[in-house]
Image 1 (cartoon, helix red, strand yellow):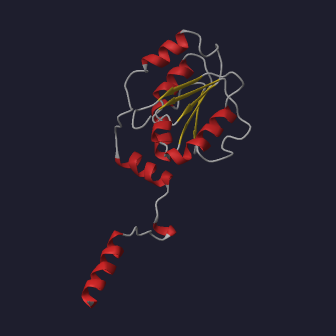
Image 2 (cartoon, rainbow, N blue to C red):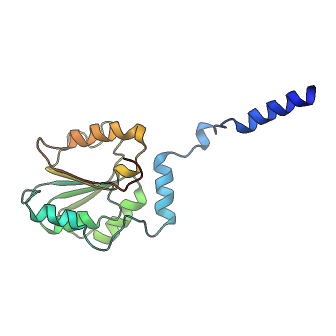
Image 3 (cartoon, one colour):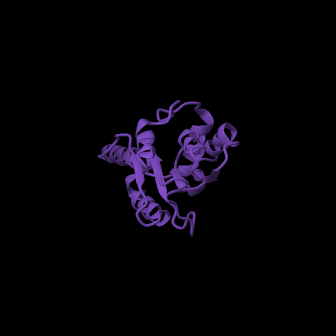
Amino acid sequence: GGSRQGNRTLVRSIGARVRRPRSLRTTRQQRWERKWEQTTTFPWQVDDVPPQLDVAVSAGWVPPGGSVLDLGCGEGLSAAWLARRGHPVLRIDFAPTAVTRARERFGGVPGLAFDVVDVCRPGELADRTFGALVDRGCLSNIHPRLRSAYAANVASWAIPGAPFLLSMMGRDE
């Protein structure tokens, strides 16, 4: 009788998704910031420039002196490499700590600029366009429901015909 009904109610309550009050939820940016603050190395960090980027630049993929946007680039090794080859580069990341680390490591490289940007927020980098775009893992870490916002921003940042080098780490297709 009565206790059986009470047990069903308890099970439903335990199984239900409990939403924290908005003030206690962490934002996507806060989660990434926490990761950067607590972690010194990530799987996508490398000590050498990725071979696909070297091949693309050697093949003339980026016109000499052409501007480059490096999306979600962490500590900025690829961005610094491109800037040292004469390309003005804006390297952006979602996490302020990632940008700080990149500035500490590569702040003296001429032609390299840094900014904290949410690649999924409409209107970011308004009126800025680039001759080439590089993404070595940013899209891989974006929730599928936000990818259309990412794509809209990437398209708005590219000059017509701009090449886009995209490397994804296989979590999904």
